[in-house]
Length: 416
Image 1 (cartoon, one colour):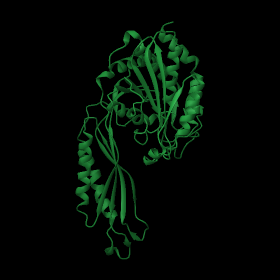
Image 2 (cartoon, rainbow, N blue to C red):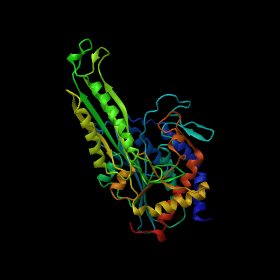
Image 3 (cartoon, helix red, strand yellow):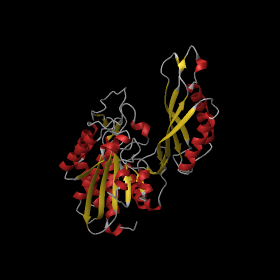
Image 4 (cartoon, rainbow, N blue to C red):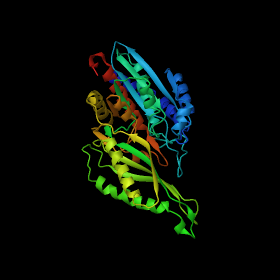
């Protein structure tokens, strides 16, 4: 048998175990908010230990987690060094935190139920699936009778929904990892090499509350907010003209996702808070984007009599741009994905933003690839009845394991 055939055979023989591992991960909730994710990390470490993989546990101080709006964060690193000499360190990152399930489920959101070849549950596709993809890829390599050089690290982190600074950001900033290459959680039918950035802001307009019977005695913050909303949404006309050259990404967009204000129906609202999300394409400069949005808001509110303004940045996630050193990753994944799935797997960008940007900011060449369908919408990620087609999990595990084999063969060791 060739090495690839041995890898495939091991994964096939252990696939039922891989499915049970993913079911166990789905059955421990990681709803964020509230973001009490340390229990899932402990459970994951236990399951990995049962498979012979030691997971270092790196807890974030509770006070720091609370300052970010999370209850608890413990990140995991599994390290395995092969003994054929020096070689690259390839990290595999997936996040365990996920948005709350919401309503409308026909299968339990924490059931991990398998029906019709699909595993159902919150985070079944994004991204607990790739805890399984990556763990079993590493196990397949460990079982392989081949000389490999370098190291594989599994990074299982718990802060993607709130920006990643306490997930990969925590590990990277403290020097707990310094990988040469990165594969991060994604889907099976595309290799993502670029993604959008994101600016999130909280904008508070303060007026003066008063009785609705005497509206002239108050300053209506909601009227000011209405003018601002009109201006913000009109700005999308300008943004649609800024086209990205990256396949899979179109143009920037601004969305207002939350509005809070007023105290009662018979009171002139004295305070209104909105939270907005400005997606930026890879070609945009994050500092310039933030300055533009702030100037637009300040210009509108300056025309509103008696209104004071406070702008708070909630998140500034930089776009991911391809780094030249990702070529070996891209080539290997595309080659094996076509062999496994029987169709070309293109490179593309995504309008999402991910933790991968944090590795990119540290100069780590990265791609996004893992178990899942062609689009986020197909998986129902962040919606009711999220699910993963198990044949995609099986195929992606084969692709990742074969790719790691290529990268860690001594003849393929390269300078990064």
